Image 1: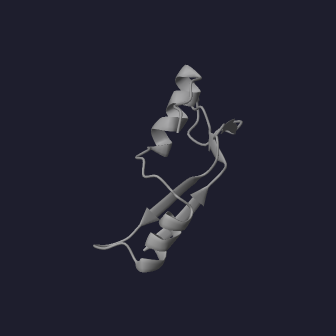
Image 2: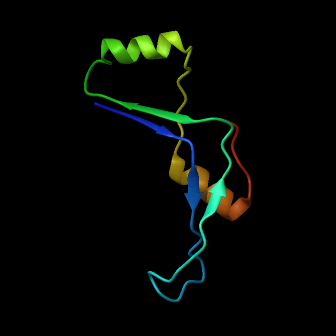
Length: 80
């Protein structure tokens, strides 16, 4: 199982790069809060279930990669 909290997303725009590892500037992706990622096999552990219940956390699917691509290409951010 794994619990991850993401509060700082960044992207590095590689369009037009001439070298694979050329230095690039990282740009922040604004988040209205944090992304809590819970991963587990089969059943959610009781302590995770209690965490979700206690903090009234709602489930929503999000791709952090796609969120960053939208920020880089379209300068738009999905409301999460």
